[in-house]
Structure formats: structure tokens, C-alpha cells
Image 1 (cartoon, rainbow, N blue to C red):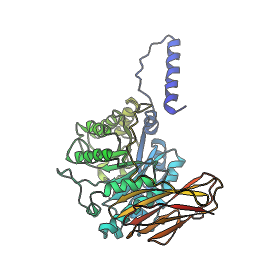
Image 2: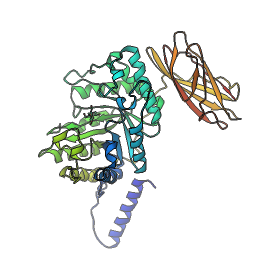
Image 3: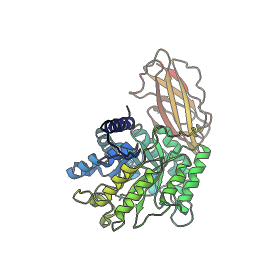
Image 4: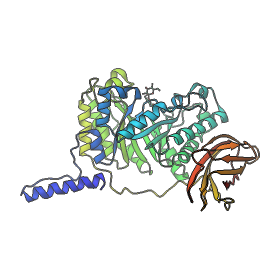
Length: 457
Ligand code: 9MR
């Protein structure tokens, strides 16, 4: 029995019991009485999360609040580009892995933040431009999303790519200068690397209908119409002393495009209105059936990047603030996400149709799916064992003239141009009959015409 059905059953039993006892009672179909943010959000089919610095997990006040109140976490800094790829091609996942383990041990989902952003880039990337940067960026997306594959609820694939001010256009950055299609290339690479994660665009100053949020809205509408894989939009919601009256309407117009919406970095300036604004943001999310969760950007006031703003739900001693009570009440009073939300027809066509695998020559077959952009591509190759299984495999491709392999994962490449061969690595060579494994490679130039042939040993 899922949680919501269990809840409904419990309500039915309570009502039946009350009627049997001759009492009258009024039931709103949605009210509930969770006593923690995580329980109350979960009762409504949503998550309630916090940004975490893993170094604080050993502080007991911090960890106690985190584990009691939150069922989602996001790394405040530890999954950013500078942290995960401090030197080009040398990946470091210590902080991110630690957070994922903590989440798994405590029944929490994980938001991934952020694959590409103009800030917190490692020094080596800051100094790059053009196709070298584009290839490095797409490789970063592929590698990091592959590392965390299956463990991330939602990825902020691209963070803060739109300009402030009234233009509604893109922000200038080294990434933007690689070509306007950098965002869609990143989303395609993320989808190929972790097909199960929801892929979000995330930004701030989008707390109502304004030029910036409209620019993003137009991009999402365009992506949906062209089948670029985007599933969600994150509204950071770093808020001041008032909330735009069309905050909820703005969430709803994005939801109406067929994407989920999430409040991703909520914090609010201290002062008389703080508690009200926290409550109003929570109600707005609850009123939008595609608003799937809220994340606050830190646990206690003293954990916040906003310093003396005291912008969070717990004071520095770990006590609940008035804002906490308003959020909890809004979660309890709000409607649940419908059990069977309308599903959108799938809109992500494969960017290049998978090529038909040739008949397996020695007990395996291979097919490729390509994500291409001007000047480069990522190929994901699926290897399927034949009826005898494999103890090893080898896949050959012939690259178009001028194309070359720059990176390979889950296989070992021999050669980089023309005829290139990929052999299994030690953990994915042995396949049972019909079993499937995947490896990938990134290339410069064109990926057109790649037709893999598989040989088993
Ligand atoms: O909270 C983060 C802080 O510790 C970092 O120093 C800062 C560096 O840019 O990033 C902060 O988090 C930001 C987030 O990643 C993206 N949206 C704005 C957040 C607050 O600046």
C-alpha cells in the first residue's frame, strides 16, 4: 500500500469510528496533521529538502534537525564543477558521495546541483573558450551524471543562465559564448547519462511573471516543442521582504507547459514578513499540482550564505521559528498531488535514431544512440549478449573523416580516429544471455554514420 492510500485508509477508519460513536465531524479531504516537514510533505506526495554542507553532518544539532525534518537534500557546494572536476578529467566525488550515502541511510532523495553554471567553475575551465570549453562542459555533464546515475531525483543541469534586468535574454558567460545551443546540449548529455533523473533548469529572480522568468518560459516552451529533454524548472526563491502577488501564477504557467516545478533554494529576509512569506510560498507550491517539492537553502540561520539575514526556519540554537510553523501548517492544509497525475505524452525523440544493430557476429550485438551538437557528440553504446552470454566483448566503429574520440567511459578504446575499437572493462565483460550493458564515448567532429559491430569472447 502506498503512503497516500495508507493515509486515506486511516482517515476512513477514523471517520467510521467517529460515526459509529455517534459523533459528527467535519472532514476536509486534504487536511492532515504531520508534525515534521518531511512527514507533512510526504503525505501530500512531495518532498521537503535542505541544502547541506557535509562537513556539518557531524554536528549533532544540525544532523538531528536534518534527519528529523527533511526528506531531500542538495549539496550546497559539493557537487558543483569546481568541486567535482578540480583538474580537467580528474573527478572528485568525496563530498557528493558522502551526501548520497547520508540520504540513502535516512530515507531522503537527492537533488543534484549543479552540472553547469557560470560560477564556481574550476580555474582550468574559466580559462577555456570555444569548442574546447564546449567539449569539456559536455564531458563534465556526462561524467558527473554517469557517476551519480540512479541516485539523483532531479539534476539542476544548468543554473542561472539568464540575464538580470529587463532583456529576458541569456547571461553572457564563457559557456554562452560557445553557442546558444549549449543548454540543450547539456540537457541531452544529462539524459543520455542518467535517463532516470528529472532534468531541471534552475534560476533566481524568477519569483513572479517578469522579463527574466518569461525568457526562461520561452526557452522551456521551445525545448518542449522540439523534444529537448527537460522535466522541471527550479525557482530558487531567495526572497526579500515581500512576495510577488503572481508568484503562484508564475509557477502554474510553467507547469502548464508540461514540466514539474520545484522551489529550490528558499530563504527569506528576516523581519515582520518572514514567517508570512515562508507560508505563502509553501501554499503556492501546494496549490500547483506539479510543484513537487520545496528546498530551503540551509538548515539553521547560522548555516545560511545570507549571514545576518537570519533567513531560514531554525535559529542558531536549532529552535523552530515562526516561519517553521507557517510552513508546517501550509503543508498540512494543502492538497495532495493527485494520485494519478496526468502524464504528458513523451516528447523526447531520440536525437538521432538508434542505428539498427547488425546481426551479432559472435554472440553479441550493439546499438548506438547519439547526442550531437555542432563540432561534437556523445555516443552511448548498448551491448546485448546473445544466447550464449559473453565473458568479454569488443565493439568496433568507424568514425567519419575528421572525427576523433576524446573520452571513453565503461570501456577501453584502441585508436581515436577512423576504425576505433572498444573493449569491455573488468566489471562489464561478463554478461548472461540477453543481458545488456552500456558504455559511452565523446568525440569531436561529426558522429554521423557510426554503426557499431560487436564481437563476443
Ligand atoms: O550557498 C552557496 C555558498 O556557500 C557559495 O559560497 C556560493 C558560491 O557562489 O554559492 C551559494 O549557493 C548558491 C547556489 O549554488 C546557486 N544559487 C545562489 C546560491 C546562493 O548564492
